Amino acid sequence: MTEMTHDRAATPRRTAAQRLHDLLSMPAGAILLVFVLVQIACIAGGLLFPDDFRYLSPANMGIMMRSVPVLGCLALGAGMLMIAGEFDLSIGSVYTFTAVVMAMLVGNGVDAFLAAPAGLLIGAAIGLLNGALTLRFNLPSFIVTLGGLLFWRGAVLLLNGAIQVRFDPNPVFNELFSGTILGINAAFIWFIALCLVFYALLHRHRFGNHVFATGGNRSAATAIGVNTNRIKLMAFAIAGFMAAFAGILATTRVGSVQPGQGTGLELQAIAACVIGGLSLRGGRGSILGVFLGVMLIFTITDVLLLLRAPGFYLDMFIASLIVVASIFNHGLDRRGAST
Amino acid sequence: MSLLALHNINKTFGPLKALTDLSFEVGHSEVVGLLGDNGAGKSTTVNMISGIHRPSSGYISVDGQRQDFANRRDSAEAGIETIYQNTALVDCLSISRNIFLGRELTDRFGFLDLKQMREIAMQVLESAVHISGINSPDKLVGDLSGGQKQAVAIARAVFFKRRVLLLDEPTSALSVRETEALLHQVLKLKSEGVSSVLVTHNLYHAYQVCDRFVIMSHGTKVFDVAKADTTIEELTQHVVLT
Image (cartoon, rainbow over all chains, first blue to last red; front, side, top):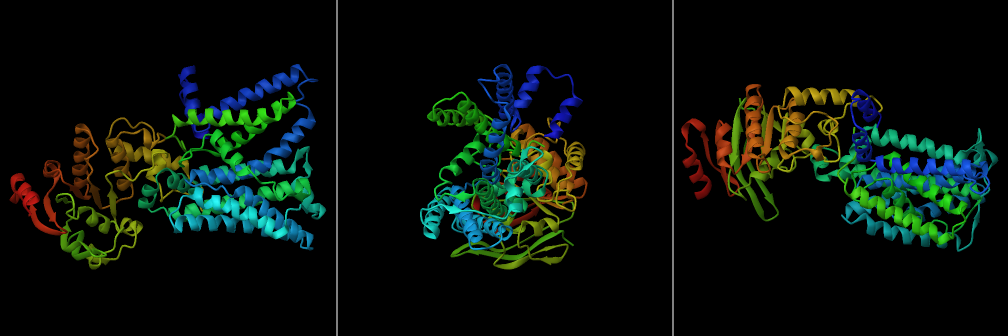
């Protein structure tokens, strides 16, 4: 993305229309435009009506920063996998399952700093299993991970029944994942840091180049010598890992795990990715898009809550956003990593 | 000594015998036309040379050295680049990323040197391949025409110093003008010491540029002749009647 801005600076004689066209044809250009407009409107509203529309109040900012990271981490993993051309519907269940395992380990006296990596490893291993089944038997990952969704949801109940598990880690662990640093929520800092890591990995690293190639044209990538199976397996593992990481953030924040808490999260994560400009067919998208997709979902949710809109408005708004985003993206379906 | 040679190659897929006792050679700075009707075994031969299939018996040699290609990377290391019908490019990636796909320039942590990749890509496109209309290495390959895509694939081969290009039905998706440009490119590369194998069933395109013709039928070679010793009528007869 930096290259593109650089290019534009080098050729100053572009008209406004061309600039707009360039912006819109960037992988995350349209969503960026929408996001900025929504933010401007919200900030203006917050400044004009500080008492009725508390968008800028510290309490509201705090809520936003605490809500975003869980879905954000799930979407980062799901997004990378989608760009590689596969789905993972099981991440919501994996998120709950690994959180339950971690909480139970801590409940049995294991240190949280050992239990959390164990959860992450289980998440990655489940991702690998999904990937291995998908690739070994040449199945659609949609089906395999639909199986995973049901299986691991059941496994949660098998492990601990339909009761909540308390999570009571040591204070250092608590501070690290749900504390506040310089007024900013720790989980949000984790999310931003992970966005940067994913950006570097996907857009600046050889691995990301191979992820785009695998999702964009698998036979070409294979012909050139990219090991597409390995890339897909790694992407599956990353999706599982990030689901487990989201589980750690959510569990530390709340202090317990509800057996039903992950239901529907996988679809929200995919929705965030689609809003952010990722193609369901793979090969197209950007980390900026995923980030903005997640942020936009929460901003709109937040605005509707602040306006005291009834709950069902939320789903209807998100639904419309997904469909409009897909219609828009459909026309640009060949766009991908632009540099 | 020949640059690339196939020695008595047989290939069976289960009960199906795809290639029978196939031998032919490609010399240095030579353009060979590999001709034959559909189903003659041309594609199997290409896949064999590029390392996708392994011979059931017989072997391939490069510079007289016996080779055992397990995958495409092996054949690329031996200096052979295959340019496929539906060129092996990724539409959603830029030209420079495509040229370096699988052989990215990176630092030791695997991070891409995008600046250098763009500069080299532009240089290669400008100097080695003269196809108009490509003005930026950041263009997505999906936005290019069929001929431009092939130019990118050839640029890739040229940059990585391949010595043999295998062009599998290169002209089937091209306009007349693009075809001319491509054939011209093959001759230019020949003058620079790059051999080509033009796999096609378009005799007229092959006749324009090839120095020698190998005609296949039913999985084996039925005719092998230098251009000076044959006519396009004779070639047609061998393709059609054998």
